[in-house]
Length: 529
Image 1 (cartoon, one colour):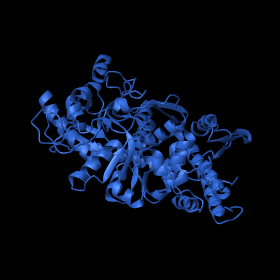
Image 2: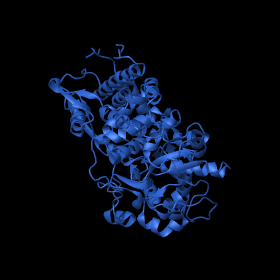
Image 3: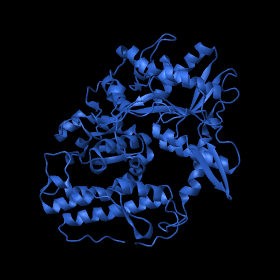
Image 4: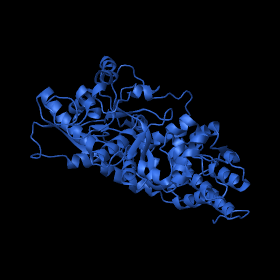
């Protein structure tokens, strides 16, 4: 094993300080005396949502609040990035507050948008050690909505076997998100590729250089999309597809909205997309006279329906107005913003005025009552498919594995994939090609190497196979949860998660080099130290 020198972890020092500064931006930029009428209420919201959603919810909430309470209200948005970035900012701010013995929060009222997984992380207790003293606190705070109101609002608390709102009362689904494929019909036709119907279609080697991917390390929603592939198709098959999608990528974006933009402009042929981004962009292209070149599909039986939550932050400076915003988002007026057609409306009339958001409402009763007025006649509760035996450890490895096999070594991956797809024996009439599909011994070996999973060190010289479900649990407990922190597997001053990603990276660096060597007809691959 290579000797690893201890290093200064910049991410643990400078980066958290920058995140704390970002957390203060909403208050710093919020209108001060003279900027707003003294009687105007405001609510400060962290969100990954796009400009169109922010516009309609700002306008809708202000009108609803004035009509309901007789007071003016304004939303102050803070948009530092995707949900994963927002979570890191809030966590860094909470840890800084605990170190400085001050209350957590106070800079913003709500977090609105993202995926249920990220909110499940945000609701957890934050614990730090300060000179041997354990200090604890919470990022989220329960608004205290009563159970009867929640039951009346939502009905059954389940979609595809998962909760629509947090059973402990920390977050509440405001909409539902699906995950599928956005594609450009013109580009696919030019490449001689059929319109996709399943995730495996994006593994087609003819799509090399024509896929836009998103780094799951920067997007919680994309992590959920990739997890849906793995949970529904299995770890091995799922990663075979994801690995080839990554190999076909012309770019790896940092946020989910980039995919439909790339595809609609013709820079890419297809890519994974949140449903509303894909549908919204398809509508925008159609409205601009671009025809129906942009399509979107939810792969049947291979997707997940996930709540898009809203949650109150601890020590919200505008708590009462924040609670009202949540109630607005779940009211008929708030739900209608997601699926009604846009037009100029009278005060109190349901629906957006300027933008058609193309998202799925969360309330069963609202869907049943107003489906005839929806743009997309989709019942998310029917579309959702339940995973009978989910791999609870799968998600933890998606971001570090994707970084190691793709985001951190794009050029190496491209060279290895070229060696495979350009091999004379590679089948041209199949979308997903694995070692089981070929007879040529060299190509078979190349594909086996491409799809192999890392072996990870454990205590006392033990080895653990990431391809084994049992071993994944042990690796997660040992490396990511700290069970093996005293086994000497990584430097004391290093992050075990960063070190694990580095091990993954070394594995793929060597694997890609071996594939290249086999493609050149060499017997062995010599890897530079």
